[in-house]
Image 1: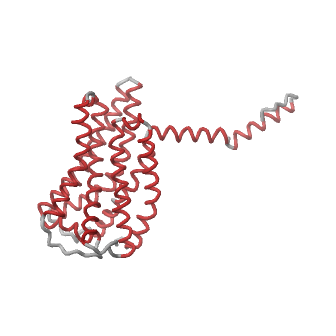
Image 2: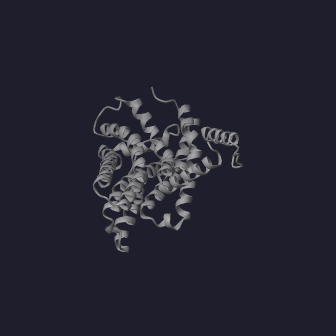
Image 3: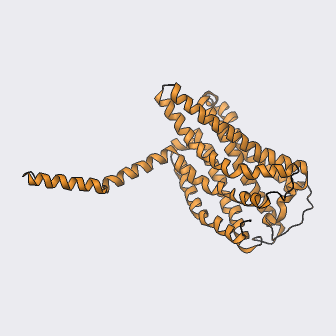
Length: 322
């Protein structure tokens, strides 16, 4: 049975504000410090969070309003086209950015010579990230604003029924599912598993402590994000590809709609995963916990101290250091 609209409203609304706050916090942390800001491995994370913040403040908010009221926020064609364009472009950009991040992490760790010069950094670092944003913008601009679409506007449907324009042509629908969903998921799985295996190999076969620490930190920054993406995105997109290839949409329809809905959590949970996976923030959390423990000793430690003082006093050697 499909999740009702009212439940979807609360499922999206509950984590939205905490997610926005954590996104702003992580971005502030990464952009404030020059070392973090200029580190190449942080650039894709900054871009990923920035695009996610745009989606949270626009597309997810508009979807929350839709699930609560059953209609589009504004009953105008201009808003409907803005809704479907921003929503689709932001989501696909995030998927492609995660895919590029999983591939680039191999280059950063094992082939860092590709980034030694300014020209190489432009070609192998900055240009791919720019294309990850520009390509979806251009592709969906053509689909929604240039290619004729005979699908009627429905203000009581999500995205005003405009996303169905992608499926008006079977070839375009199949390309959309393969190029923007299945292929990125396959690449992410392949390179994430490959990165994990290579890091383990380096750990047990190469004895350089500094290198092992670098491998571990850079892998831990990306692997949780990739796992989140794979877990939430791969199942619905596999079905979407099957539908585009001719599978009747009545098969697994409720599961497809529900799993597709939960793909919003990729944007909502990514800031928390980034906050937990960044090595610098892990160090700060560890320092805070150590400070708290020093200020608030646990019960057994206090009990042991009291027993020691009592024994010292019995022996005639009471101390003032309680």
